[in-house]
Image (cartoon, rainbow, N blue to C red; front, top):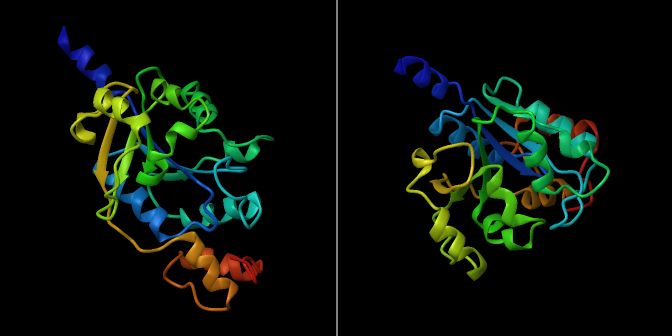
Length: 224
């Protein structure tokens, strides 16, 4: 009698979500995605380019170019895919809207993991309806050796109530927070744009196919 119940429990999927402007997508984004997908044995990990991020400057290049670069970067990357739903919205990209949209497409037991860097996590109190995020997902915080700052006071009670001892302790479809170690890669999109704007090489900081696209379309020239 127990066998069907155990079988059903294993049917739940684990889906990671990694958002960003990806302006351009680079090896730091991709390495984080691969490490999380492998260590947590995710069924899939979606990179979600944002159209008009409300918390940062507008991207340097168009949504179409950024989407094309992510698609090129993920060719042959098993388990990684791009989700373009935020680019189809004619309004700022709020994470809560994306979570509600994705959750509506999934089975009730499927596990969603929103992947955030430490700085983004600390900025959560400024996000739209941020206190509702955990109703739809778990939050997985990428921990770096140089992230030694404390969480803001607005998050301390949430951390005390919702943190679990590592990603393997996450249970159910949503509602918890876990930290995962991230290999530090000293690379940023700002750095890459500055290199390209000054005519220097960005090779090995972005996938070759992405760099070829940048050059073919004349992106990031004279701007950082």
